Picture (cartoon, rainbow, N blue to C red):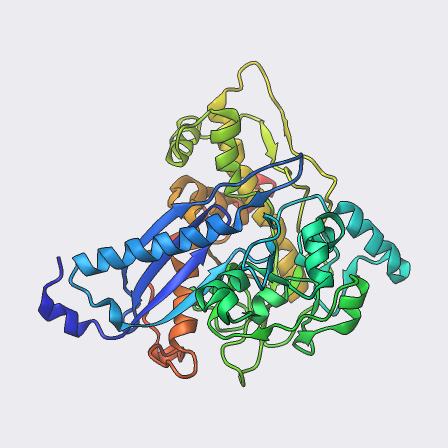
Length: 467
């Protein structure tokens, strides 16, 4: 328990709402030391009304934020930490997940359609047919036309949900990604809530021109949508962008890789806005390789197959055999994202023999995550012209040491895991603390607290493994 004398030494605090696909967290950091003081986490339920459909309840998402905030503040109070010293709250979120709500009642008009939902495939095909040469790559957005992004989800809602259609006609509909929904609710909702987003989320809607850094009338017209009227906020970052900031990737050539100009991909990657840390600051760009199913494969093995009871059990099972014994697992449950962008692909498990057991399948699942990452980094090396010398990692799966070692072996480069794994929330807190008018957190490289890390070196010879 912290003594009351220590409370004075903490300095300003900065909080982060980390709203992910599977859970919500609220975390509070010391702005001077980047120390995580307290946090709370609540799982989010997903529903699957039809094959390929994935939805979440917007009210449950909002309630989970309130619960996490309340419980974290209770924990801080028990530690004798003054919660009134929280100077800013950053928001980081699952990016492409799409919501529409009624600005007069404050009620969601449909469930949130999650980023990996596939129901919009026919919409995607219609849009591709409208483009010259049926080219699915839109250079204004840096994104291919895909079910992944928000615009096609919004188009589906307008075409298929009567409540949404009526609200659009009567100018009551508000559209946003999860950040917009949360900020609108937290700043007053129907009583004057702020309807905003930031460039990292906007750049994932397929409506945002990453060159002009504004909503694009031509793209909105292509999707038959009115030009969005949202403002751009500073203290909100999409999850992967927040992780970039949390990993302190502020230089060209770092992987996570960032650029101060948009590098367009010729090898199936996305060109996206990495961050823009201030109204008058330049935008930084990133090449991104999006994988649909990585950590979610663990939940699938647990919930759908029942071969593990907890995520930690996966590492033990895989370590018991140390090989997949020729079993290969491609978890293309929602098609394949980068670098293929093939929505019709489906998952496959092959190489099974009578000897194969659940431990081999567990190992193959971990390898699947690593092989997908290898494909992304190969494409990134080709697009960027910069050979990446190491990979910085974050997220829940980094606690799996076997996975980290496998990743280093398959990439043939070191994998660096920060000792403080909450880099996504940390990035959102850093951006919020450094925002104009707050200025309790410096983003100058010389002022940043050095993050300790653990490095996993490759233990196999790249010439000898055929990779």
